[in-house]
Image 1 (cartoon, helix red, strand yellow):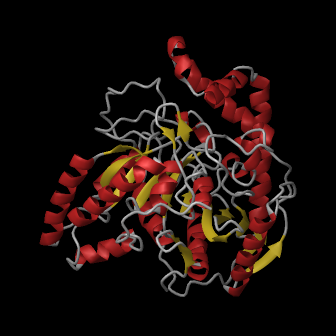
Image 2 (cartoon, rainbow, N blue to C red):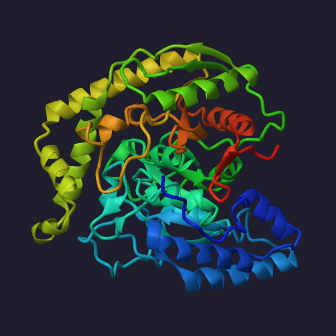
Image 3 (cartoon, rainbow, N blue to C red):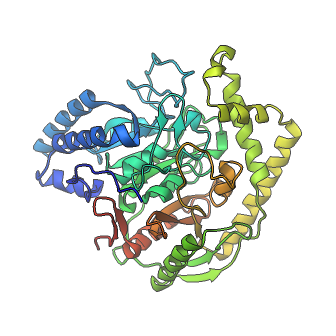
Length: 475
């Protein structure tokens, strides 16, 4: 296997939570942290392509102002001076949001922040750049006609997944501490699994969106980080109501981390395959071993399937209709600039009838009801995140699969149901590539998912690319 990329290592073990404590003690400054993040991006990006925009000058300027506040002991917010990134699908004032497409206008205007961007700024975070995405986030890998191929830091010949692939790479290499992803069918959890990082898809509506995603109520915004604690910190900021999102749910209750880090009292349903998925043997072995640790942490684990058949037809009906909606807004002369696969998906979407959409909605309704019933008996559902390892870049799926939905069967069902779901690093497969464990909770049980992920991380550890190993978490 090709060796991992060599980059500066002094930030490899640092987290956002630890960085804030160092700021409080005046042992390090935001200027030093931001400068090192930018240096690491400059070193890695020519090979890995995690960033489509890096805001060197403005990030350094904001860091200097933050440094002044910390020197006075007057931080502006809970994230003052913490480097953060925004996915290229999410509006960011002063930076282009081109959605990976040559059909977009480089001149904008870029005058508005999406709610998640605005909340991060208000809390004092330093937006250091925009992370790469496939064109309009339409698929489960990260490459686009505009920005090219994004590569996996574990092996640059392989994909980091998508569509939040740039954010996954940035999290894996600590190119900033807090990374915003979006997930319409697995786009946070897939790259989290493939890059050995933590990714969390909150309950739909908990993190406000504006403008609305083309995938409407399939799309969730959430954090991608190296540790669960950092994701919890980020959620405390971004999960705040915004009047621009009419679908916003109840207020996020927040979470106090349990220093005991146990799963006592939780009843977990463990599904190896949802009843219909073929999982690679070495991935299954890693997941089985991780589930044994859940029992050791005090959970009652029952092997079971939730009882639904593959809802892929309902999902693709919604998905391709959304892609067709995007296409309808693009001038016909510009369509020749688009990703060929995107065009094919849009053409399929244009054939979907109203009756087919209504049937898909009925399937979604029944699936949501079934999962609500399941969670009357089980606090969490546990599955593999992805049934296969990362595959070579430049293709949307391995040769034995027809498209990205075929190799992501564990993720998209829970976009249909709008449930919270996380991917937690759980070990290495036979190729020494990371494997993710998926945790799914009932709607609005986000704190249960996050607390469980925190306990699991305390037992399973977390990855360190710098040391080329899987290392125990700090207790």
